[in-house]
Length: 336
Ligand SMILES: Cc1cc2nc3c(=O)[nH]c(=O)nc-3n(C[C@H](O)[C@H](O)[C@H](O)COP(=O)(O)OP(=O)(O)OC[C@H]3O[C@@H](n4cnc5c(N)ncnc54)[C@H](O)[C@@H]3O)c2cc1C
Image (cartoon, rainbow, N blue to C red):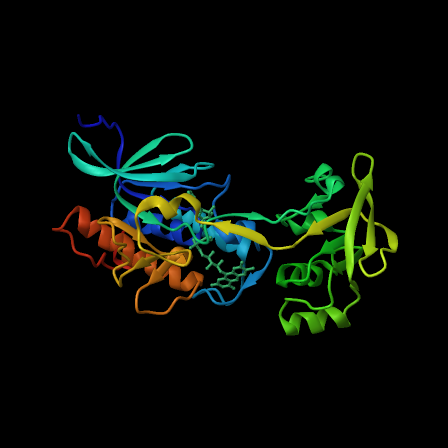
């Protein structure tokens, strides 16, 4: 018995990061009825969540742009043709189902069902979440002075800041915030850092107070954070430092999770695609960080993802309507 479907989309884009947003723009340009499913509460992917305040230098046409601004521009462009956007909705299942007009895909999410002729997976590194520190008082102050991500660095102006971590994120934030904050202390539990050598050298020469072999024991305060107790893990000696903000940058977990069960050929945590960005499932495409081009190179860069999204959407258009050309024409010759 065919399912009755009220709303059938031409293309459903799983993941509203930079590549998904650019794909949504192209799908609109091709007059495809488009939907974006995004598991987070906001669009922009890694740009918005992981490094909103960093400069990006390698996106064509922008000699230098802050990630947050690039995400904003991408949202403006990606939403230009008014695709349906479902935030906080994680795509969990993919099935081929029969409806009155033929066979289509049904994407099951934690909130409902979405029917679509084609699917473009731009799920990046998967659903990501920062690694948490198992210090009960840090959990207590989360969002009230203890942060895992920086959304708006101006919140740290004039504050006393404790950064925890030894990777690029921790070191980059220490350098980025040192002139804005009143004081920055960075603690790392061992001598070796994973951060880029150049950044580390700059950090060591800067006024940031770097303490190695130190870990966080406790965060104290009344309503807000007032001090942090740190300890030297070689002799357990404790030091109490006055702080307003604790920024924990100890990496993040990324998991493509449910996509693993969709029947696509995978390589490591990525979906294998051919040069047309097609997966082994007909009408299902992948682009951006999640896509592993077969017999080609893997570059997890925004510029690469934009090109892949362009190919995927135009091939999908031709899949739905074989009479349509794959080449979309030049946007400069269109009236938008
Ligand atoms: C610190 C850092 C600095 C970087 N600097 C640069 C740089 O200078 N230049 C450059 O080109 N690249 C840079 N990158 C890489 C760049 O950010 C990525 O290549 C880019 O974000 C990939 O875009 P994407 O849309 O494929 O994936 P993402 O940005 O990862 O977006 C994927 C989206 O899909 C969502 N999602 C995942 N699974 C599901 C699901 N099942 N259902 C619904 N939604 C889902 C996620 O929540 C996410 O929002 C950097 C990355 C990092 C971490």
